[in-house]
Length: 290
Image (tube, rainbow, N blue to C red):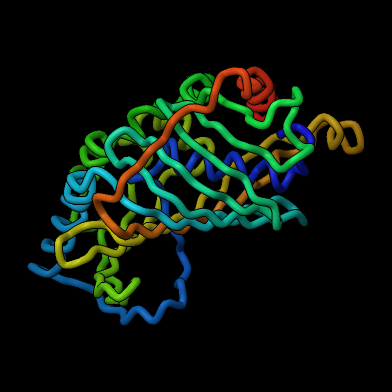
């Protein structure tokens, strides 16, 4: 991990965050996705129905227990950008997952087991002469002042969604996803209502806009969100610029699609002898970006 370029490192951590921290909650894209959705704005009873649909979507999706998932994570910071594409299966109840992620043409095998991220890095890039690295996401979340466990718990996510009011939900039209007809909603989530909202507000602002596409059963088929995070300059950047350099803006755009509900998920930790624990390094990196 430490040998990878900044863009690749950001991408890997972004994917980990999606899978372990925001499987069923997040923030959205203000722009159109170009997927052919036919726009409309609901009013009155239609608006109320849309709000109720979004409120119940998390519960209805989680009731399926598992699903296959495809995702794309795009990150950019200043002139650097990178894209990660992944596919695999996720347990919607506990957040465990098995994924294959491709970052800048390199393939990474990734597992999340009991809130611990494992990544099998490309040959020659893993430290410690072991094929796997691991990061304890619970410890990382604790340092950042965020409740990573509850954010990945669909029951908690549902509680947040139920706090949404009619003014927070807008129907944007319909779209066909993987052969399934869906209805698209744009949702504005008040950051103050999330765990450690004050800390999160400093990083992403007062609201998190999120787009969701729901099927006829009210289950989530697609989720899209954008985040703009504040990241402090690295030590190298600080040494080459004025000491008062302002934080960088790191943009993360994530798109997830869910299919094949009820699929089998086998997420097992690699043998301990094949794993290098990178949690300490990740925590130090996090401190430098705080």
